[in-house]
Amino acid sequence: MKRIFTYILIFVITCWMFISLLINHQRQQIDFIAVGDNLIHPVVYQDANNGKDSYNFQKMYRPIAPYIQDKDLAYINQESPLGGDDRPFSGFKRFNTPSVVAKAVIDTGFNLINGSNNHSLDQGTSGINNSLSTWHKYQDKALFTGMFKSKNDYNKTPTINIKNTKVSMLSYTFGTNNLTPKSPYQIKYINKQQIKRDIKKAKQHSDFIVISMHWGKEGSHKPSKKQKEYAKFLAKQNVDVVIGMHPHVIQPVEWVKGTQNHKTLVAYSLGNFLNGQETGTESNHLGGSIQFKIANNHNDTKISDVKWRSIVNHYEMTAPYNNDSRHHFKVYMLNDYPNKLADQHGLQYQRNANISKSQLQQITTNVIDERFLDNNSY
Image 1 (tube, rainbow, N blue to C red):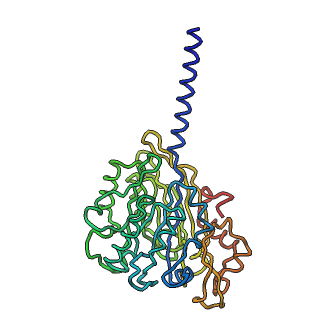
Image 2 (cartoon, one colour):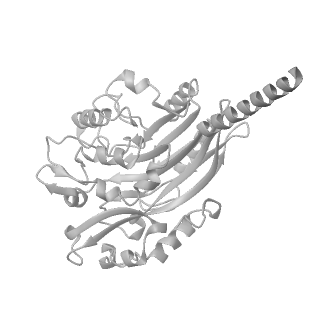
Image 3 (cartoon, rainbow, N blue to C red):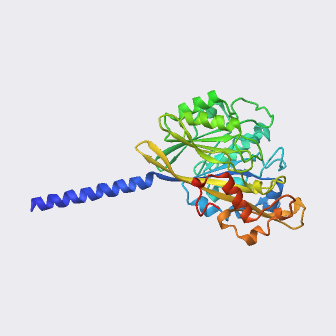
């Protein structure tokens, strides 16, 4: 009888251990998504205007929200700064975006928000402070980084804890449109020595390191020599993923070899997200998202199931060829974007542009390696 009881006890303990390991494994797997430039031009915030001092941006993100909300980590580049509602809102070249866009971004599901780009200083020091104070309201839901208020903040490693995995994000920009920061500790520029120091410090406590790089040539689907150079440099530091932006069009994704058999996933440019860019063609309204899984097993993190998903920035026109009449801005996954809606896109009235769904699919396959594509990619 005692022997039978012992066998039953061993069986129960074994089952419990197996279930515990299974649950632990499920907890450690993190679903990640990243999108490109959230660039709020005047036509976008005017379209969001519900009346005096009231804006509804949520409706613009609604078609894509389910894809963001079912992820554990969701990255976005907030290209246009939230410079302060006490001053006029504005677009290119000195952006100032209504602060309520932050709530829409958070409600959509983004929780990894980059503020380091060439427009970071558009509204000066007070603009940086307003951006920081606005995003600070959501610190329990998201990590905002790329702008800093003090030397102490500048030297910290921005980190978010997801499913017992510490994910750090380090953000850098090539420049700030010839605007000089009032303090050397407001923005981090692309500098190999600085980056190397930051990565070394992050590795002391981080399980996974994301690098946000504002780099490249606007309008080019091909990474520049500098982008390639920095991608190799970052891979040698054995970071996990590099997310690129600034070209306003999509660029390739690739694995770049590091050291000790490590590989770094590099998405050179995810293009535009929600935006009202007036110049350009369909390429500026075709964005992308990179999605993958992060497995953290005994402090060994691995990336798997890397997939590309193309995105469309949709809008319509009340008056053909009148860019000021653009409205109904919404962001869709290309796979969900019906041909009927593509036929209504305002770019149909843009000379030298082809906004058909087949054209957007063609650009996707021309730029993105097929190993990152599947039936849902476009």
